[in-house]
Image 1 (cartoon, one colour):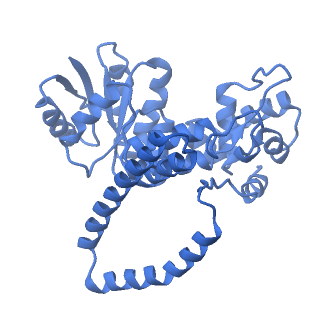
Image 2 (tube, one colour; image 1 turned 180 degrees about the horizontal axis):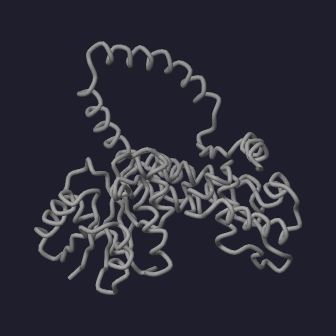
Image 3 (cartoon, helix red, strand yellow; image 1 turned 30 degrees about the horizontal axis):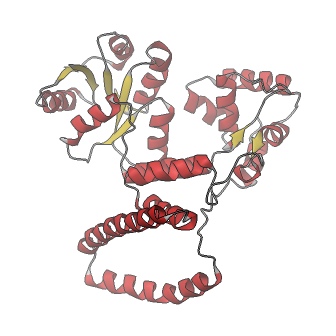
Length: 339
């Protein structure tokens, strides 16, 4: 039987959530109703398999993320799920950065939480299509950090790499400290050590030395249907996860490959799946709009259609995913925030 520790944003919410999960039958649920300071010790118990924690604890937004970050080194085998009040980009990303294997929107149907728990326990990641889209966009905009010697040995520790990744996003020392739950003094010390190890003297030198773009990846990385194996695998994973854009992209991958009759079958299958998802989304949005808003949408679509036809006629049959990379203004921001 799976043992779950639940810590929602308030005692009453914790009890209600625990009662809801207990009805699942095969889940043993333990509500945590004390101050968050004792949650780490409770979750560190080997009797706990899953921790469900709210991002907000003790009226402190982000406290749940801090708890997870500390637990990662104590219980790396512990599955964790974060309850989110918001599906904005930063809370979703912060949850997974803290070590969560799933995020659950509090506005979702409560009965889905049991399914979420079982999926996470099977080693799967739980997120809805919007949250997956946030992760994909963040992945596409995250530079690759390269800091190895001639023998390919990493020169930086994992924590130092985390600091450099934050720096690459243009974060200040204070923002890096908040994200990694460190003091600003500790962040400065990490940067000094990184400077010394890599032989650089400024943030700009550091970024220039360590950041590479996916477009300039080694030529030895083979491309398959215009995508690297990693890109194709990611598209396929997201398609199976239910993201319509990925389903359409996967259809294009099979269509472009066309190495045999089965590729055409798979391409058409994914087109059908993507269209079905799109129609359902269209019907859902239609019910939310007023007649005036519907007419405005149709007018905009009619204006856009001729431009799309011109684009289609000048483009090849094979679509390429355009992965946008961070612009150089991040480097400028890092330079301005050097102190």
